[in-house]
Amino acid sequence: MAPPVERVSVELMPGLILHPGWLDGPARTRLAADLAAGFSVAPPYRPRMPRTGRPFSVTMTNCGPLGWVSDIAGYRYQAHHPETGAPWPAIPELALRAWDDLSGYPAPPEAALVNLYAADARMGLHQDRDEATLDAPVLSLSLGASALFRYGGTSRSDPTRSVRLHAGDALVMGGAARLVHHGIDRILPRPPDLLGAGEAMPAFLPPDGRCNLTLRRVTRPEPSPTA
Ligand code: SIN
Ligand code: FE2
Image: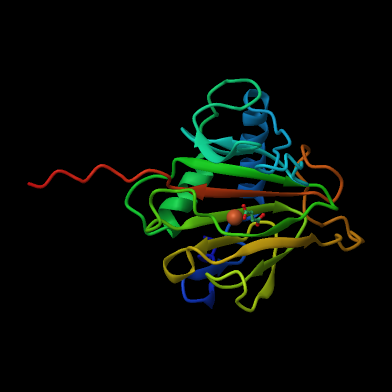
């Protein structure tokens, strides 16, 4: 019998917990396949910044009963794809399992935002605060190329640090870190794959691209009935 996989985790700051390699190779392949199936229902599209209408450098889609969208009118969650009007596809099983294992939250996630980064895409420092339930963490799962993730504090002017996120890593932003500013400085070039044993890249990604999934609880769960 194979020995149990040893799981390590790193507390980057209180509430910000990195679980390197949480998804192993087969799990990453499976998650990528489930996401790709979802894209046929909810194709990735390029959102725009509120007010200015400037296009994002990432493309996005969602899974789950709700999805996070941004357009000239603002940021919000909604139950349908902004371009096709169709409901979002279901959150992949493996992502739900990661939420159960890592979130410490008693209710399931309602939205899984999928960000797709080409090699030159980035994401500016921001807070995830469009949810009515800030007691639930945001759980991030990464696939494809590695990225330099920057995180600071709850104030925009707080000092920042960076950490590399690799394929399979899970990152929990919860507790005191739920409202920290964070972003992606850049996608890191992939090392030359001399032995052909490098990361199998999901077919939907552009060359050297990256995919990040963030799971969020959006609405307050119904209080559980008391006995
Ligand atoms: C996000 O903050 O929505 C995405 C972070 C990431 O791509 O790792
Ligand atoms: Fe975010």
